[in-house]
Amino acid sequence: MHLLQSLIKRRNTNMYHTTEYNREFWNAARAKRRIPNATVLETGRDTQNGSYRLPYESNKKFEAFRQKENLFRRIGTVVSAPKGDYTIWAHDNEPETTWLTDKDPMFFENVETYDDYQLDGHTLGCATRVSEDFTEDAGFDVETQVTREFARSIGRAEEAACINGDGVNAPKGFLKDAMIGHYALGIDYSDVVDLFFAQDPEYRRNSVWIMNNETAYKLRTMTDGDGGYLWNHSDNTLLGKPVYISDYMPSATEGTGARPIAFGDFSYFWIIDRKPFAMRSLTEVLVPQQQVGYVGYETIDAKLIRPEAVCVMQMK
Image (cartoon, rainbow, N blue to C red):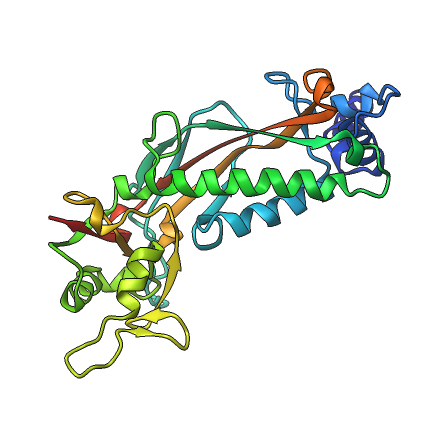
């Protein structure tokens, strides 16, 4: 009996992988008049907001679209932690490595050397709408349209929070915790070089630059004393390190306290997925407009777990 219950539970847990779940989910999303199989969809339902987890293949599309929109899902570390309550603890430590001998095979001694970080859950909501003319057209790809729209908006909102989030109503952006590597009145050649060498060599090895387009334009035209460009236009590197552009980075023109350039190893910036993306349709609300609305939710947190891994330039 216990084995049967276990098998049923396992089947229900993995139902969102099935063709049946996929069919019923998108039939409901298209606002088909027939009542979808509630038993099938119930396995992916979030009881807090009434949304439903995306089918497995649809979720893969969503995640691919979202990764393109959020820089930090490409250069940071993404961790899936859907179990437990909203607060979890992450541990960060430096691996201990040494050459061993037959006489000294034991070496793991610093078992207490690690840092704890509290990680919570911040829920991001998003809404979009599609004309009924499209949802009722069997040839229209509702799945791709809806997942792309959600991924675009959510990915960009994530990226903005990963940079500037306050840590209260959104994840904490890395600019809040990063080390100040250099103070500058403007941005010139020596400022960039000073920031580069302010970074610890341990982290400089895998460091990248992040700035907005305004700052990038200034650096693209900057030359050294011999007239050579600081920016390598052939591979978009600066002092040999890749440059990433985000419009959510501040500009130097914003004045005192602005942090327009970051240089660091962003593998130490973590994004923690607490709940997978889920959505539901709104059929009644938009009937007068002959549209179908969709609302989606995800719960994440983010944190720079090693502040010294990222240095920023701060304007005086």
